[in-house]
Amino acid sequence: MSFLARLALGVFCLLAAGRAATPQSEGTIQSRSFPSAHLGKDLAYLLYLPPGFDATGTTRYPVVYLLHGRGDKLTAWTTIKPELDRMIAEGRIPAVIAIMPDAPSSRRAGYYIDSQFTGTDKLPAGEPVESAFTLDLVAHVDVTYPTKTDRLSRVVAGYSMGGYGALRYALVHPELFGAAIVLSPAVYFPLPPPDSSTREFGAFGRGAQLFDDAIYTAKNYPAVIPAFVATGLPLVMFIAVGDDERALADPAQASHDLDYEAHTLYNHIRRVPGITSELRVINGPHDWATWRPTFIEGAEYVFAKLPPRAAAQR
Image 1: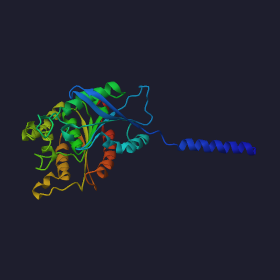
Image 2: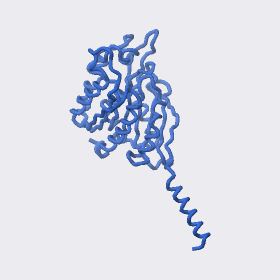
Image 3: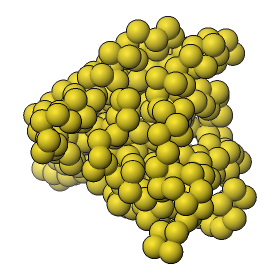
Image 4: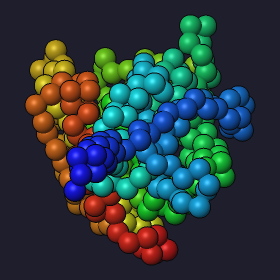
């Protein structure tokens, strides 16, 4: 082989190696909104499209709904975009569409429920957030994007207040969601401690009353489990918490520390027929040092454990 031929072959091999080493394209995040009938105004959300997204619409994708915590905004979940890209590129989870909705109701403490609080001079009235998300948003996403529309192709995830929302939506709306990733959930049994934000902004209020024990109890997970069981539908749930979550100052309220409450929740959930569940406790506080690794593990867990889609017809 001549020198020039060897040189040309070497250049070709280098170029080919460079192409092989080039990482897959990244996913994209776009800002979107739509008119929500239940809110009577636009509902904003961020749309994540996976690497290699098929813009022709011939490929259908499962959907992950990502609920932010109290005081946060829809942009909070964008921090895990590199992890989503990586898990998809490595085949650890399927290519997914992710929806990151904004939840500004009740001064960003609406707890993803339909509130009966009518407001005061200092606080705005609550809003029907649950109806807006489970009826308006899911329907909008399914008619706007190439989604798989069966329940076993929808996952709802959330941290803190969003963990409450993810837990509630999975149990109360199992016809919509086949799996939940519940991170550091702000759930309290039987009632929240005195300094909980659930009591402060009216989400669980009635009329001008900021907090109503009966409303909270009726919406809390022990009260909704029997109706979930009656559906006979399968559900996969991953629950996680950090061992350094904030400890309440009053030792008498220790059972309301979120690490304790997460164990209480798991020991309810693990006994529920039809639910496949896992609890993870890691070394971490109430922030992304806990939520990032547990979201990764949770996403891999639920997609591995989701039953065949035919089970959606049960």
